[in-house]
Image (cartoon, rainbow, N blue to C red; front, side, top):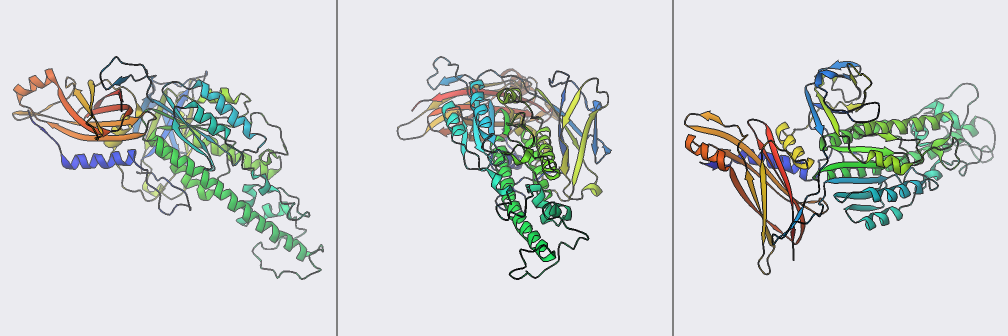
Length: 572
């Protein structure tokens, strides 16, 4: 028997692993201060969750059950997969001295709470933090959680320490953006209430938005007209000069609101970007819970929003959201987003649309109008058991650098409903993409699922010399019973990909190892291989601590995989 390794293939796979296990690349020329994503291919992936009347996710459907539309035009579904999330038992942690296994749970589910300290007013903000603290009691032993403020003012990385998480929630405060809406302090003659959306429209030259604040009698003068500032004594009048003076004040004030709002959007997306990049490298179920009433997203940021959704889909990160305000009164003086004038309603509608698009696009949901915030989080904390991923390739002429609407439906609903991604940005130029095979390998590796098609066994050993790092040896035994060998003259050929990763007790990747194994035994060696399988020993330098070790092997001929996880505790 001979085992050899293809250097080029290993290097290509390593580049793909680096893509997933390291930082996620940024878009060219992003808005200042924002890490960004870009779709890696012209294949658009659309996540869809099908639920029955009881709200339970439904599996067992085929590609023929779905219809997919891009800008109302029926598309051919070129790729289709069903992701099934099964419950997992805690991974046992074993001591380095091979003592009796201890049922200490290593991480297999990651929940990130992202609290919107920018759009929640102080009177409602404690509803979010209190619900988050209460929900911590529901976390399981194998869960790791993180707490982030949308503004970036507070960050508690993933941990199993509930007290650290409680302190993080308790240390949050609302930034109270209401001041940006109150223009009367600038000039008591201007009594309109300016939202971020209104200010954005005023800055874009929308006359109707400007007239909400400064009504114009008779004909409307061009908004771009340059007018000499009136001299002293004229400002207090009631003529055209005075009206133009007030309009200029409103424009200047609107510009300051837009600048503040843009910073908030950038902060919001930066937190989501960082979270997705971090969680994409973690082994297990991944869920972001937004505690937010939503945010108006100007058109200039829609491309970034859609790219973040696309990256979450690829990383299998589910985004859910709850509006912590519960049932709120209209025209609440403490919350500008509840005002019932036309522009405030328009902004509120945009906020809801943003939340529904971000959540449904990743397989999640947005719950609002429910006073049981902790209960709502509880309903959302678990990723749906079944998630469909539909792919299609837009025609070249449709790649027009515009936002496209998506619609997914069932040919025969029979009481079932579909929640799916609602839009995507049709970029005309796509960067180089990692191969589909490599993406599938890494996605399966990080899913945390035990894949049984190829049987694996892991034996973990450690050793340490004085003054030297501990050495953790991972002995991977691969059963070849189900591996396909193709006859090539006097030999039988097969190729396996082996990926091994080590994660600390909070799910952070520590070490990884990738190998392509080419097998070409003759007939006599083949019989022996089938009986004994192969063994791969891999050594890692580590510091004392608890670790999750995960191994995955893939048969490149049959396209089947096997995986196994094990825990180990290395004492100082």
